[in-house]
Image (tube, rainbow, N blue to C red; front, side, top):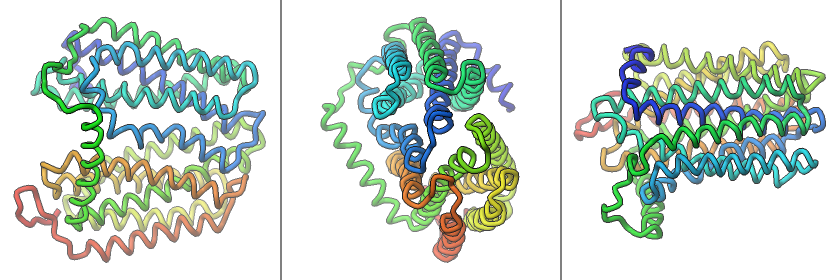
Length: 434
């Protein structure tokens, strides 16, 4: 079915509509907030963004998802999820009001980023509560459809929020006061999110508090042991290990490229912060088209060739595209390079997801995917740190470009050699080619 058909199917339920509206308004606020933070720190006329500042800002926006993700469920299974959906947005709104006040009074350093970190950390619990609550508002047959519609719509709402943030920036300026206004708009949207969540019954979304569960300390220990179990299981499944290694290298190099792109548009390609923001936004949009095209072409392509072959091809393509399109250090080729890298990135991820889902035993799949999530986000942040160490303030560095292009080429070769004769073991235990 199409997205529109799926939406019509699940939107009939009143409680799903309320939970869905909670997600959409919160995601819209997330987009406004993240644009406000990144736009001010990286593209403010008052500041000259350095590689370290760009890397720190990007890390702040991502670290809560990397670190808190596996542990959020421990508390989501202990607190009333409806209450999380009501109070988490209010906590975020209060933090944003305080952050806006800091900006108005000229305090835009560590307290500003710390407040952003708190907002995103609380959001990790909010998103986990939304996922855990979904089975309480839709029937089992519609659960997969409802989940797909919710996640896709949330992503679209976040992009829309970033667009709202951009319009607000144009209207109120790119300085401290303008950034404060953007954060206040995000705070208002979070308050609306909380109000919508109150329409849901207090005990409707679980958890089932009568269920016997381990103590929180024991449960947290189980998460750590689960991550270790997942890592050991991957080590015993060589095909999965090669696949995770490939995407880990990709994410590390992608992290360096992300910071390079920010710096080039902020300090090299353009003469103004406003123009730099526009160029960077265009690169993101074009990269998104690459992601979309990969989602369209990867399934039919991998019906005819092995997924390992497609991963190798995408990594090699990324190496060539990175050098050919980025080496001129000119805006238009660089934007086109964003499309190429987006295509390769999503093509690799779709194949890695399927490989891991196929060959990892069902009993270990959750733990392995938690381990996968930490690799995916953690090495991206590590790429930020590497970029801070090797990139100049302008972002123009042939040495860094050589590291990125050469890294993709070596990753393609290593993955090809490692996975060449690997048989995938399906969950039934039989050997199959994927």
